[in-house]
Length: 223
Image 1: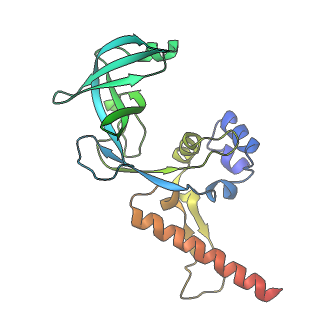
Image 2: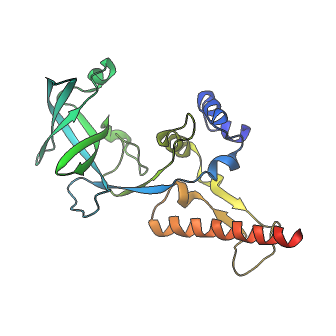
Image 3: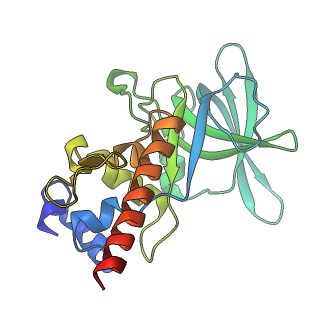
């Protein structure tokens, strides 16, 4: 676990251990079960599973009460205005949501109704090419989605992977398997956890499956 603790906080390391991860290898070989496409708001799409990234200013907050109290949020980006509903009125939520502040939002449309999935105050001075809400560039992202494992949610996995350097994902097979035409002497799992394209993601998964199949065949022949 010391391999991972070099890059993580003690709290994150403890959480990983409690969920069954005791080595770097354990963690990087726990794969996401699907890839979520996040596209800039305003792009027409036929894919109902896509999530939209929108940067907009909060213009008004209204309180409504039916069975439960909820917030009605009016956002505007200069061209479009959308009214969104938030069913969390905790004190920390009210401290974050300030009128005339700009936010990045994750939206999903279903039955002509926009749902607010997540939000974060927009920080244009800290924009980066990875998907970090509040600091994301206005482009298409491919975000892995992980199944919940004990105390770890998908966002916890993403947070850890964002902290790991790229070289961590390269598994060197030189000397472990004979040279052959099917498998290379190294496998890179970065496209599985930090995909830049679906093609790279699927190719990396295919290489991993081929390796596992090869090892099973070798193991069968030995015994």
